Every structure is written in C-alpha cells, then in structure tokens.
Length: 409
Image 1 (cartoon, rainbow, N blue to C red):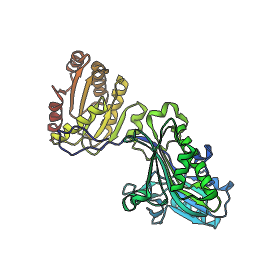
Image 2 (image 1 turned 45 degrees about the vertical axis):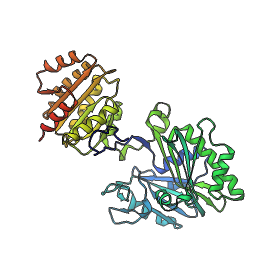
Image 3 (image 1 turned 30 degrees about the horizontal axis):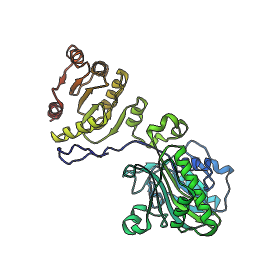
Image 4 (image 1 turned 45 degrees about the horizontal axis):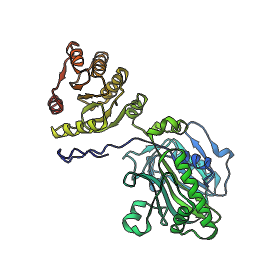
C-alpha cells in the first residue's frame, strides 16, 4: 500500500500488508488434501521428529524449509552450500540434514544473516521432463482472481516476464464462473501440454482453482508445475492467505510458522492490532490505516522518522491501548511516541484512559505527544490534564508531528 497524500514529499512509505505465509511442506499438505498431485514427502525437525524412518524413495530431494526463495543457490552460516540437495544414497541424508538443521540459510531473499532452519523436507524425487509456471492471485486492477501461466517454469518468473514477455499469459477469472473446462484447456495449451498430459494438466488446474477458493487464498503459486514421465504434478508450492479470512480458516491459520515473524507483529496480532515495524525513532499509535499513513508522512515532512505503522482500529479498548504502548516502549529505537486519534467510532476518553494507565504502569520515560479529536474529546483532554503526567498535547496533526520531532532533536 502506497501513501496517497500527494501534497507531501515523495519519500513514500511502503507499508506491507501482513499475510499468512506457509512453509513449502505445509502448502503441500493443503494441496494433497485437495487431491492435487504432488511428490510424497516427510519432515525432519529440530524438535526430534524424524519422518524419514517411515519414508522410502529411489531418489531423495532434501529441502531446507524457510519463507524465502532461492534456497537452492543459498549457503549456510556454517559454510555448507545449497538449501536443496538430491541423493540416491539414503545414508547421506542424515549428514546433509545435520548441516541444515539449526543453521542459518542465506539467500538473495533473506536478511544478511539468513534465516534459521528448523525443518527439512525430504521428498520423493521425480523425473521432470518439462517445467512450467502456474499461479492464481487476487489482482486489484482486474477486480478479482487472475491466472498467470508460463511454459518457462522452474526459474524466476520476474526474469521471464522482463526478458520474454510473450511467454507470460494472464487470464482473468470470473469469481462466480470460476475456471471452466474451456478456460483450463486454454491454459494447458499455452503451457504446451500434449495428449494425455494435456488432460492431466486440465484436471490439476481445476483442482488448484478449487483449493484457491476453499482456503481463501490471495496467492497460489506452483513453480514448477511440472510434466514428469508419467504425470503432471506441483513440485514446489507457495500459498498466501488474507488475514480477513482468519475467522473461517482457523485450521489453516493455526499452521502458521511464527518463528520467522517479527515478534512485535506477533504480539500485536494477539490484541487485533495492526502493527508493522520500521526503522525510525518516533513510535506511532493511530486509529485508521489512512490516518496512520498520513501521520507517518507528516512526521517525515517535519524531518523525523516513524518507527512503526500501528493502527489500533475503530473498536479499540483500554486493554488494546495498553498492549500497543507495551509494544512501542519495548522498541529500543523509539525515543518519542506520537498518539494521533480521530474519534469517529473510537471514544477519545477510552484512548485517554488507556494512555494514562499505560504511562503509570510502564513508568514511561520518553516524550509522549497526544493529539485527540472527535467523540468525547473534551472528557479525554480532562483525563490527560488531570493525570499529572508530563504528556504534551497538540492542537492538530502538524503541531503533534513537530513536537514529536523537536522532542528528540
């Protein structure tokens, strides 16, 4: 999401939307449950679970499980090369796995110090004859789901789109009509499946569409969507899910691996707060995503750097306000806090009580600037003024941002 406040300097903040991401093996569990053809696999993890004891194959694919791409070309902090290995020697598996588990894998998509590997997937290797690419995503410009297909699979799809755009096909899908036999056949033909494999591809495409709907996915990416010597299978899978569907997808959301998430975001989600950490030093507590974006922009306009995006929402209560303050004050980079609340649905007095209680319980030592407007604002101001706390109030947003920036300069 990009700021729409066009009159402000174009230092545009990109605030990511938090989606549930599953590890590859978890996505494959969902594919298997929907009847999609995949490789058989098992998991070995740092908690002592070893599915290899009951798993056999002629050739094994060993894949480190992290939420990042480029694993095959990555390297570990212990010097071991490659997060993906293939072997026919069962005796080599333990040695390879031990060099992955508990170590940090570094790829072009991870932080510089990599991501710790706590799970390794062992899959049955398949004889891939041809690799294609298939994904289904929700596209705002098309106002619905879109299939993206390419006969050039198994590689970075962005590179394919840039260098050979004619190898990319985009197919809008009517959410009610879905992927019909004719549409699936058209996609299969573009992917260059022939004969019996064409029929198999059509069926797999329809199954993938059904899964996309059933689990409320925002993205379902299969790369490669492969033709083997005997079948069409999803070799590698990635699924993303919209947080708004959590209430009806509890089974899926309990699968989420929080070990790679920002602990502040994890904590915020427990209280239904929308928090995303940034790299500045002015903590923000705001109600409403648009107002939060404007607040960050105004801070930047006044020469400051926001430390976070934090939207407490319209139905916030004092407990949530307290939790928000705890998250902000635990960030060692935060040197001042700016509260900007417009009370439409929100009762400003609720915010004020939460602020006062949080300041007293946490013994806040950094500057706190509060700007409140709207429902019950006069009562809110009385609560703050009578608290005896060194809280600075502001008459408007620009005044609040200026005071926050000046308080740490």
